Image (cartoon, rainbow, N blue to C red):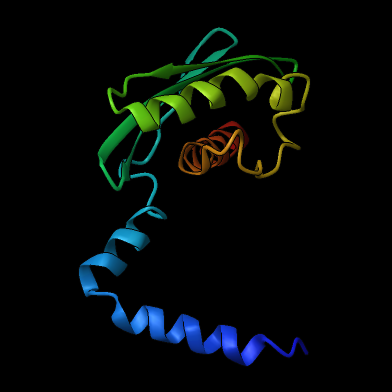
Length: 139
């Protein structure tokens, strides 16, 4: 066991005990992602959904559009609507890099994606929407 573990634990407990409830709620709020269950629409091989989720600064939404041919993702597009500068950077970076992760993958075999370009909340929203699409395709 790390000899610093008791000290680290003591510091963590002391820090958390100094937090107000509103501070803890703000921290927990970052983990709440989708406020509306995503529903995918289909137009030929194109599947599109819009997700809404909460971030510390308020509500955000993104649209995700996937082209799927023979069960394989051939393209992905992300629609960004935020005006928040911090969110905008993360969402733009996510949009720029998600294709290199999902294009060429079988939709049925795609598992949860790790955080893309630091955009943890956007990635979680994408994962939740992707799971819903996989369920929709199976039914």
